[in-house]
Length: 311
Ligand code: CP
Ligand code: NVA
Image 1: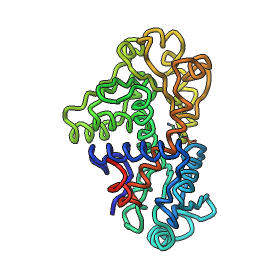
Image 2 (image 1 turned 90 degrees about the vertical axis):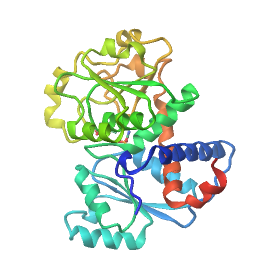
Image 3 (image 1 turned 135 degrees about the horizontal axis):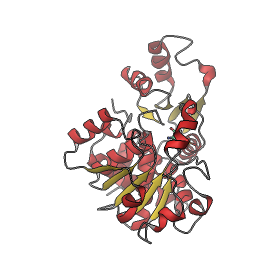
Image 4 (image 1 turned 180 degrees about the vertical axis):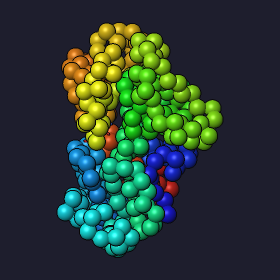
């Protein structure tokens, strides 16, 4: 069964097909056409952490495709009320796929292990693959193509950075992480990326101004991710020289664009003038969450339509 727990679950060709499908469905929406590609299909959203973008973009996207979505909060008792196998096998009787946001990546892996329905990762501590799809769609729109582009991530080597490193490797883009010592990406994850994509152009630097010098896009995310709240004070200290502010932006080419997955802590990892400035594509990027995920949903649940409508 096809799952989307991370970008390792798909090939570069499949990734490009999902992105092309997203582009076609987005163009159709702009022209007022909302084809019912997933009519009568139902997805569940099983979330252990808060969300605005992921939840609403999946719900709205599924509705626009003619399907339905069910948001499942803590009251369904996932992991608490009954055995994982019973929970998952029963859920699979009702829905065509589940989008899961979990505290630990192992929990989405367990959910997928029963093959009761396709499982889509809506963020874990390890990676955030749906976010990366939207980010590449945005880079493609802004520059006309993602080919050969250099993405520089300034901040924590976290779940978002790890998905971006992998998607850049898959698309032969250049990826640089500028982070403080001790906050680099997970070494097991990076070994898997290097093993799967030996030509990947990924580097880690500790000087943000040097890192952004050849950037096409500069990306940042919170210094303290959900679940790391106890480390907030130490992280503020560690990351204080890694703020994406006007001075850092001036070290980059004038054509560089600014991205952030949101939610942001304004005044911490990014300043108001950068997030709201002329070089920011952050709101468009958030909007692309829905378009990218529609491409993913159609690829997972409406493959026949792709054959007839996507070149
Ligand atoms: N970027 C992102 O995943 O946002 P939410 O946490 O609001 O879903
Ligand atoms: N790194 C952040 C991303 C939120 C979308 C977190 O995991 O909290």
